[in-house]
Amino acid sequence: MLPLLLPAAQTALKFNLSDSEKNSRHLARMQRKKVVIDTKIESASTEKGLLLIHTGNGKGKSTAAFGLLARALGHGMKAVVIQFIKGRSDTGEEAFFRSAPNLSWHVMGDGFTWETQNPEQDLASARKAWELVCSYLRDETVHLVILDELTYALKYGWLSIEEVSAALKNRPLMQHVVVTGRAAPPALIELADTVSEANLVKHAFQAGVQAMPGIEW
Image (cartoon, rainbow, N blue to C red; front, side):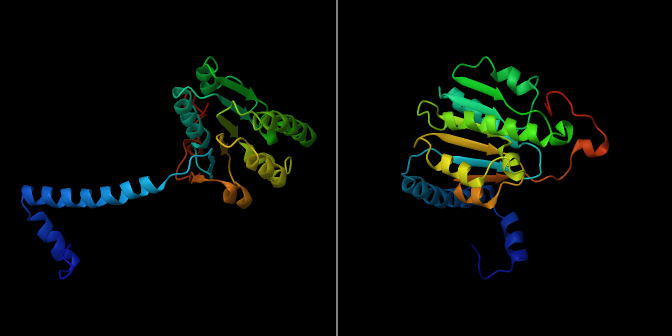
């Protein structure tokens, strides 16, 4: 650090340093950073099942959850996927994961609400899916539960945040849960351990490009 020099002067001096001096400064920074990170790692002593939320208007929420699914299965964990809105069983991820050991995959939706145009049917499907979810949230042998697009069931009032929160709080201690979908409600975010938001910057569909296999489904 050169606190007595203006930023421009510090930058100029930085580029005039020899390779040896640059390496020495880099080493010093990394040593300081390692102390900070090691301290944080040592202080993280709690072990428990985590509630993760992938929300936001951008693409990749379910994709991120399925990446985590691959990681869990790689560790020999028992996992479950329950899809609330999606009604198709020809997606690439399901085709890939279907034969995986230790995995149960349930497509419980009827498609997008503007396609079904049947609120009673949507409600009944969501309630049926939630009953199945609750059975898994009581099963200590299940290590990971992915609730794909659960947030829509909350948004449309098919499920109440009270019943969802209660079930998540009372699940087995070491069970991990991942929730995906736009507009995760504040109460669910407050309950979660880790929340990630996918923001939309640009999407091919806006330019008239069809949903492409292997990318969108």
